[in-house]
Amino acid sequence: MVTAALALTLGTASAADLRIYPSFTEVREPVRAAGNTLTVTLPEAAWAGLIPGTLDLDGLTFSSAVQRQEANWLASLEGKTVYLKEDGTAEPVTLIRARDLLVRDAQGRYRTVRFEDLMFDAPPPLNPQSPSQTLTFTLPQPGAGTLTYLTRAVTWAPRYTLKAGTGGAQLSALADIRNMTDLPYEVKGTELYAGDVEVQGQPVPAPMALESRAMAGTASADFAAPKINSLGELRGLYRYALSTPFTLPANSTVTLPFLTPKLTQFERYAGLDTYFTPQNTGGTLSRFYRLKADERLPGGSLTVREEGRIAGQTTIPETAKGAEIEFTLGNDPDVRYTRTVQTVSSEKNAQGNVMKSTYKVTYVFENSKDRPVRAEVTERIGGRRILIDGVAKGQNPAAELRVDVPANGKVTRSFTLVVDNS
Image (cartoon, rainbow, N blue to C red; front, side, top):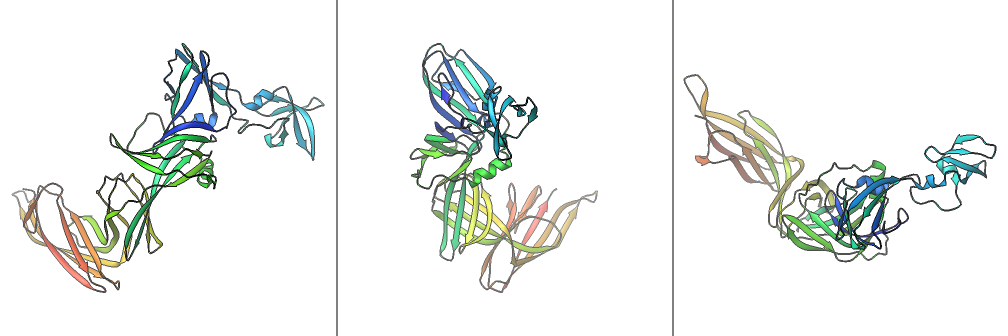
């Protein structure tokens, strides 16, 4: 893709180092200029994903750089003979305009044709109707350096699987590396970065057809899969490296085993996270999970399997080592609650406004399963001064109930709440 004097054929594999982030990639390619110019040619598909203003030369000083759009391969055949397939025969015609495929036949008549009906004396490159972009650097002197640029077309994302059963739970992860261009990469060195990294330039959405091809793409079955090793932390970013070079084909997704962290905590429970209201309420609790891992976890999608069956999917955020992850996978119709609120007292000021109220909140939990269930309720409360069961609460006060509900049983729990806005 990069030469000192002429451009390589479009679509050929590009040897590069890749620093892959969740929403973009830094491509780093070694270049060598034998003279005082260096010409970089990118296919239009690769240029479309490039973030404007990020092309640069590292290690080479240049005095100017000129970008221009080159004619496509088909335009180079204008005025030359090509062949038109019609009725099972190939008729020689002259290509007049590549832009709209205007040809002239042997009788001197003009017409437009379809590209797939044309035949050529030499094999066309990939995307022969697409133009390329050329960037020419003027250099004070020859030398070697590194071409760098950022592209939205190569990204990565982890995806986790939580396998739970009666004997406990196990968490594992895969890393999906996506290339959404027609340009393959022969990757020498690869680093993966996870974390919140913002770059300038608007994201370039991948066309839906291109995305579907990328998801369907697979790497060669006989290639030696690299391993992903942790490089530690870099200013709040998680860093990982692939152990060996690998091929990232065009329009493909390469999936590699990623993490197998140990869970230092794992709990299932039926939960409710809500806000206080003086009205009576009721309904079903939700299926909650709570876990902690012994290493940092980049944010990604999470699939939960219970005894080998899909129980639901969610996403988890960037999580530090030992930090708690809590999520829900929807309602549990077998665990219901009834919530009643009794106003014990109410104090008003001279204008008739309620300034202080005392409530008794009662929850009745019903479990129709043939096994016990842990039920947890968090009820958040607003007000200047809050007391729960006689204890003053500080910022972001909440009442919490934790109870084990027996199989096919019922449990009642209450708390007293004082809301003081005086």
